[in-house]
Each structure stands twice: as C-alpha cells, then as structure tokens.
Length: 335
Image (cartoon, rainbow, N blue to C red):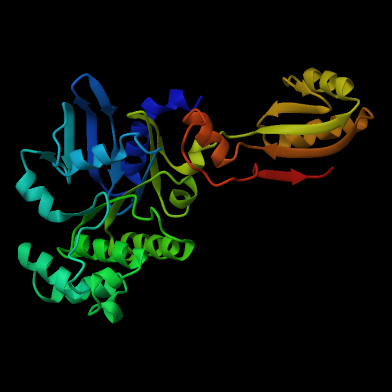
C-alpha cells in the first residue's frame, strides 16, 4: 500500500542521500500549524536534497502555501522543527533567509515602473550589487523587455519578473508557490524550462508547489503530496506507481490457472485473463513454455502497472487535484 509507505519515504530518501545525493537543503520534523481549533498542516516531515527540484503537490487548500510560509519564517509552526541548510529556523533566521529566494502567492511589483526599475528597488532594499539586476534579467530572459512598464507585461512575463526578484540575491534555495497558475501552455513551458535550468545549470534547490500532476511530473526529482494538511507521499514519481503485475490472456483460462498452480504460482482469474505477481524473465519463460506444451493458447503476456494519475488519485482519494489523463503504461510481448 502506498499509504503504508509514507512513514518510510523520508528514510528511503535519506538512505539515498547518504550515498548518492547532496545533503538536505530543507528538513522538517513534525511541523504542525493550527489556527484556533483548525489544523491546517499536520505533522509534516519534509526532506529536500540540495540541488534538486522538489514538487509539492496537492489540491487548493491542502496546506501548500501555509507550509511554504512556515519554511520562510513568515508564520510560526504551532509545533515541530524546521532545519534549513542544517540550521534551525527560527533561531538562525538571520543567517538562513538571505540564502533563500521566494515567490509566494504571486509577484508583487509597481505596475507603472519598468521591469528593471522594479528590480533595482529590490536590489537596493537587499543591498545587492547593481550587477545582480542585469544578471537576474538575463536568467529569466527579460533583458529585451526590461524598459517596458510592468503593467504591459503578459502574465507569463510578470511571473518571470517575480522569479527575477527572488533571484536578485543569488539564493541557494528558491521557493515558488504555484508559479504556473493561470498561464497559457507557452507560459507554462517557459516557467518550467526556467526552473529546470536553475537547478541543473546553477545548482539552486527549488521547491515548487502545484496542483497539476502533469506539470510537476515534467520537472521534479522528488515529490511530496499533501492532502488536507497531511503528507501522503514523499519520494520519486516512479516509486509512486506500484511495481506492477503480469497479465496473461489465455484459453482455456481454468486449465491455464491449474498448470500455473502446479508450478507453485498464485494465479488470479479475471474473465479470460490471469494475473500473477511480478516474476523474473526465467520464470515467465518457464511458465509460458509449460502452458504451450499443455496445449493452452496464449494470446498475450503483458506487464500492467498503474498510471501516475491512477496512483495519484488513489492516494488523494480522487478529489480535487487536477491531473493530466494518462493511459496505463503497459509493456507487452506477444507469444
């Protein structure tokens, strides 16, 4: 069961981190946020390796923005611990926050000022060198539009301007809350490409929240799925799927099942199909050979797995998360 693996997910990420990946940029233990009697976030254990893209998935109202605000020190957890770059928040807040850039709940800027003027204001406020403005514009590909008033920017350009503001201090960690929300496909592709480049080419750790499975699937190394304030899954999208099972389409199906049982297997009959646990190639070949020798007709042998959408919706109880429809991934070999 996927749900049963939740408690093990942080440990599995940690195990991989010890031998294969950098240390954690963010690690939380049991963070909870309550407003009166309402628990918005409950007992979250988040682990984000440095230099990776962490996709934070969940429906609107699941607790994504609240969690990110706690990670930025904008709101205090009711309980639990937050460690960023190995240091405690909030006790090391003054040392941690200058190393973080963020875009939470949309970009904020002066619409009558140009893009470059808005960035200069941010740079002056943060005491960043003048060169940081040009560098940020170049990273988000707004150099040619730098002198235009921000109010004339498209929605995608405004999002890129917001990301440029977050990059002005040359951060090691970037938190982006729904950065593709409301964008057309071209704008979504631009933001996605930008985020991937920030991690791959510049080594920036990126935590990006979204309610779109299809979007996170195309850029995240690790995902955390939150539902009603609870972290339902943490790990790779590949591991979110089950390992799959073998399906044999045979005739006569009862005779095929009897022969497979004689081989010590545990076939399950569904119509004219037989399901088997995942087997080695040698065992599959032996089983097929035995069936053919016994006169059983085999029309198809396939490995059947849940699609990402199926696994995701099962995990979130098929609620309000928007997921891109995908067919079940099937690897087939015909006998």
